[in-house]
Length: 381
Image (cartoon, rainbow, N blue to C red; front, side, top):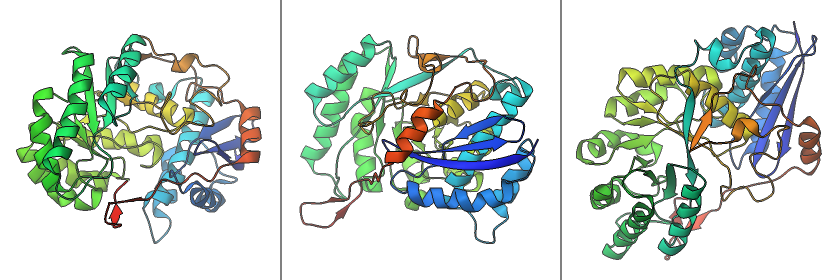
């Protein structure tokens, strides 16, 4: 079997899909994207495709080595995301060829269902309570929310209290038997994070995500040592090498993104590395159906898995949603806040190729907003 064609599709709301076709009629799908830079990743996929065309798609690990290390200049979000989508598509082909789900090829399932959480807003307590109530009624046992918007280096008493009020509103609706995770989104300085972590600790968040930007990873150990709340990070880390300092710092939860951190191959290895440090895996995935399908395959085969992010109804999905490009929504029907195990071959989904090609004709040019503080200076988004 040989790879004969590799295509990319720029589809709303902000995603990029890729399709690898073979001479035996088996095709695989992946989701290589950097949100806000999808066109750049598309160009990277085109360049990397030069290596794959004419090759045996089942030599996944060999291809991963060449795609990630075959260039003298390596790494970074664009290249690792391009590799990630191609890697997902190769695993999809392998599963379809062998008639097995990817989790079986990774060593077999270690659980029968995967816990997932729903995204809710975090802007205003009353609206937040309403949104969480709807998710509880839908069966979810966990939600994640943003802690705050644009945040100054040192939060005022009022700003700190506002974060506490929002988390308290979430806890009141959820009660003690459900979970809330809080995303700092790298918007806090280490000093501000330390202050807010202490204030929200009595509300028992499942974890706090990205307490500082990844460039300040050297500060994680100090935050871990003083934080009464488990800390999580990893959506902007792209390899085992980049996760190692965060794990040695003592983070409780590793959050690699299968569409950014080298695909299924590397995320599976990151999970094993995290296990050595007693950290749990909670893959980052606010993206489309292919990325989520890849995440779930890893989750079913990972002993130290904690919980899975998913984008159903997330605020980014204005022109399309998780189910817009799949033929059968069954793999994403969550029951009691869990995704049941899917034993269909490959990634376990059937992509609606007609819908994807039609969407690509329109394309998109999604960009994340650029925020500024009241004095006009740049603010982390």
